Amino acid sequence: MSAAAQPPLSNACGRLEAAWEVLRQIPDPEVPVISLCELGIVRDLRLREDGIDGLEVVLTPTYSGCPATELIQDDVRKALAPFGEIQVTLQRAPAWTTDWISEEGRAKLKGYGIAPPGPVAAGQGQPIRLVHRASLTKLACPRCGSEQTEKLSAFGSTACKALYRCLSCREPFEYFKPL
Amino acid sequence: MSQASIKVGSAPAVQYLLRLGDSCLVLAQRISEWSGHAPILEEDLALSNMALDLLGQARGLLTHAAKLDGQGHDEDQLAFLRDERQYLNPVLMELPRGDFAFTVLRNFAVATWLLLLWQQLEKSSDAELAAIAGKAVKEAAYHQQHAADWVVRLGDGTEESAARLRAALATLWPYFNELFDADAVDAAAQAQGLGPAWSSLKDDWLAHMGEVLREAGLSLPRNSAYQSAGRRGVHSEHMGHMLATLQYLQRAYPGGRW
Image (cartoon, each protein chain N blue to C red):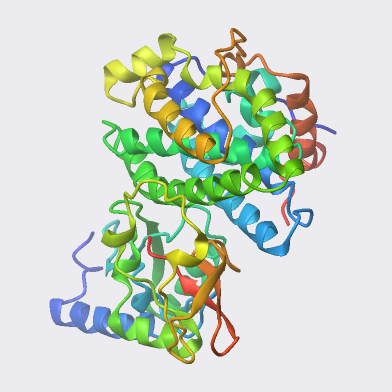
């Protein structure tokens, strides 16, 4: 990077802070009630290191095949365009986990009717469980709070969610699966 | 007008990655054939979602294989411009989707195998492969659990569903051999720390298969001597037909985009 292109430090900090502010407003395209930052997929925001005036955003994909990944990159590029040339870097490791969804994000999911994911440690690495499906679920309905719920399908409208129904209030709801 | 075919090099690391990447791609294609055709809506969604996961894993693997191959190809070129003999997936993956019992049993067998493989690949000396595995291992666990539920449900269901599951097992069984065949590509991968020899996964795989099949009221068939050779590019009659569907647009309209 040439000396002329390097902004003074205070400017750089202010610019990054302003960019973070914009980034925090970008919603997830599939679940627009929660932002990309709350979802935990924004890993870093920094000045570009290749000499081009602009910012580099480091994102991590949720699922390998999430069809929203490319849309998210476009959204980020468009929103941050006023800050110069935007470079989006996808970083796989360490792999995204639902544990990175913020507390605020979880509350928003619940308010939106999606049961937030439980902690990953409890669900991962378990052997195959061959038991009746109804006995597995102690998941509270995000609408009425009843624990009388049952799983309809392990995969909902997107790979990251499962489909449930509440036996008390009879409403179907989605569950953000721990990953 | 048509697009000329491409070939990849014979480096063992590239071949090892393509065997896995092509497995994910070809099975994704077969599973996605259920979109709009599954017996119930929930399974339509589940199968489509699992196909998407596999496709995403394939994209990472093919991109990485293309990079190691060093001919300047990308994931799309590897998927759309390789001929049948250049595809290195085991024949198991390309078999037509069959009925729901066949699909469910193949998905369970492959998810179990992939889960064991991804767990080892997380420790790969190749950082990119380890990163792909770190993500895929979590997805495979969901695929395995879901397929296992269905295997038990069908085996433990009606006479019709149990009969179909038994027929699926009899058809599929000989094709599982290829998942554990040992050869030079495997040995090189293991020696380099790239990934495990697939043969080393067999005992654990058999244990999982046996557990779930027993629960479903089926037993493991006797060993089969049949040996398919998709990993060396020798495929069944079904592969060319499947690739015709997969590749048609890019072959007929090179570089065409939506």
